[in-house]
Length: 115
Length: 112
Picture 1 (cartoon, each protein chain N blue to C red):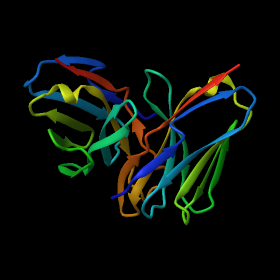
Picture 2 (cartoon, rainbow over the protein chains, first blue to last red; picture 1 turned 120 degrees about the vertical axis):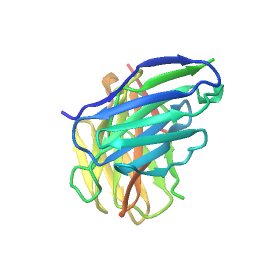
Picture 3 (cartoon, chains in turn red, blue; picture 1 turned 90 degrees about the vertical axis):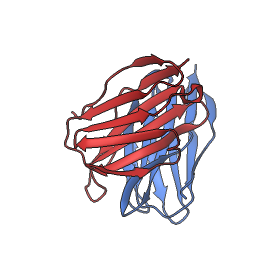
């Protein structure tokens, strides 16, 4: 079974703090994703990485950065947390699109509250 | 820029009835996915549709893809309470990239 593990289920941080959300996958997937999920807005892509040290912006990258130093680990960084970044954050991984089994597998999510 | 729209956003249906959820997307793509999310849980993959005319079925759910119309449907047959969940479609932005864009989701409630 593919396992995508996010470091925290629940997190409470103060406004202005630098926040790190960690995600690890154990299936040697090339692709990794960070989404945020908000009621009525579905999942919105923050950043996408298709290889170590490679990244692409998603639809809402402002206020976020990412790091992928190793293939299995993809970190989301909130440079200076704000209350409008209170959300559920979901990490996912997948094989490249040329493969047959390309669906993304998701972690359990991190519910972040910024106060 | 790829946009993915689902409708309806919310669906309340009686057990035993049939219904269809629609997923429209704005630019060419050759891969579409359907996911299910139970309350408080993460997303679970249901179907991967890779070509025009693709149809896949699992139990009471059947998904199809029309790439010319840029439309996918998720059909529910004889709904049961266990199907209550939120359903998302997701589209890869193009053949040469694996970036996945999701729809807003359809929250399905099945009542007796």
